[in-house]
Length: 317
Image (cartoon, rainbow, N blue to C red; front, side):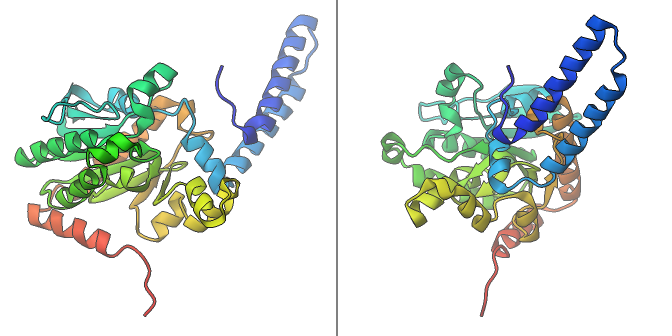
C-alpha cells in the first residue's frame, strides 16, 4: 500500500468516496455518473490548489517519501550502457554513493549519485543514503577519471547528510568532503548536478560543485536540516517549520538567490507517483544543461564554476 502523507488525507478520502460511488453504481445499476464527475472535479481542483501552496515542511515530507525515485531508478530510465565502477582504491566500496560510465541519448557521461533504499534491508545496505568518507573518495576517483578522458559528469543527489558516526570521523569525513569541494572546482569538464530529494549540508555539496545545479520541485537544499537547526536555535526540533521558513530551502527561494539554475516540475503529488514521467523531465534537464556547457573550453568551465559559487549570498556593506 502506498504511503499517504498527513496533508494528503483529504484527497484520499474524496478518492475513496468516488470508488464507493462507482461500486454502488455497478452493483445497483443506478446512474451516479454525475455525482462521480462532480467529486472527481472537486478532487482534482483540491489537489492542484494543495500542491501549489505547500509549506516547506510539506515539501520536505514529499522529498523524504519512502517511495521517491532513487539514483538507480533514474539511471535505469535515462541511461543506456551503464557500467558501475566500484571502490575507492583503498579497500572499501561505500554503497551510499554509486556511479559509473553510461550514455544519455548516445552521449557518454560519468553519472554519480547518492543511493537510498526502499526497504529496511536496502537502507542498511546503502546506509540510509548517508555516505562515509570512502564514498566521497570513490566519487572523487570517478570525477578524475571523467576529467582525464574529457567525459561530462552528472550527479544526482538525495541525502540527509554525510554519515555522522564515529567511524566516519575517524576515517576523515570532513577532509574527504573538503577534498571533493576543492577538486570538483578544478574539473575541466561540464558538471551538471540534480538535487532529486534531500540535499543536506556538506554531504550534498560534496557532489554538487557543478556548472549547473537543478532541483526537483519538491526537493530541498540546505546547510542543515530544519530539525537540526531548530534543535540548535530553540532546543526544540518541533519548530522545524519556523526553521525551514527562515532557511529558505525550497527551489523558488534558491533560484532567486542564485544557488540553483532551475527547478524541475514534478507530477502533481510528487516524483514517487510517476517514475517514468519524472525521469524524462530529469533527462531533458540534464541534456539541456550539457548542451549549454558543450561549447565552453576547460578553462572557461573552471572559471564559470568558480564565479558561480563566489557570487552566492547577499552582503550588506
